[in-house]
Length: 68
Image 1 (cartoon, rainbow, N blue to C red):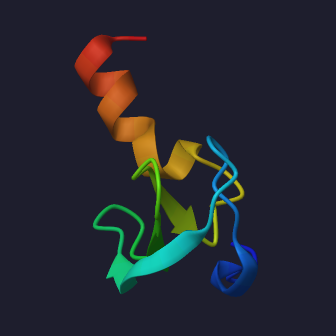
Image 2: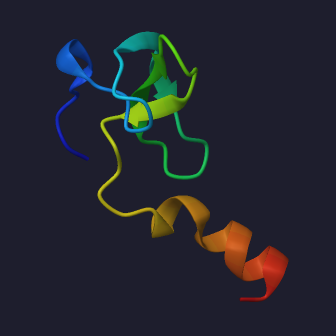
């Protein structure tokens, strides 16, 4: 994972400010920790830092549940 960017983060949806919502959240699948940022206008949530690869977070869910 990259470096946290919450000090100057911009919402990917509406380009407004992202504020720190939760610090040090642990992913139950990978054990990695990250912060959750929330847009002050549209309310979208963003992980910080964003994972480099999403596959480790969803491999069991999509492969086993949907048979894809």
